[in-house]
Image 1 (tube, helix red, strand yellow):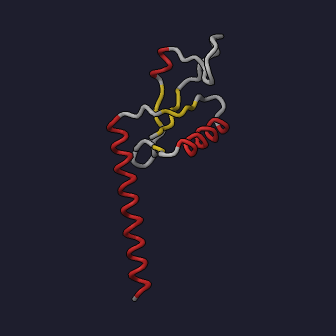
Image 2 (cartoon, helix red, strand yellow):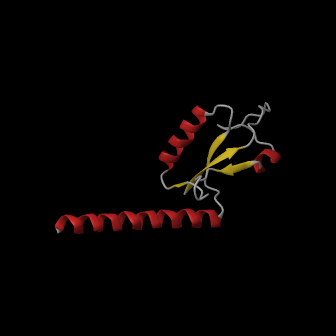
Image 3 (spheres, rainbow, N blue to C red):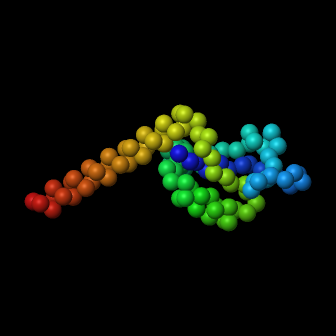
Length: 106
């Protein structure tokens, strides 16, 4: 599972060579949040890495002054809430399909 990590401050270039990402100081590593839904405050999780990377790329292009990264480090409680929300959404879709097919058959 993947989530989107948004840092509160974009780090300055330290001159250290790092692969693909800027060097993050210890204080900056703690100053982030995981992208959440505005309505129910549940973390957005993605099962497909490609889709999550596309969202990160789009967000980074829209907000070039922010540092936005993909992460697999999701707290257990946040992951449980996100999966519970996805399961409920899947059950609601199944119920809607059943209702629509029963109405069409009448």
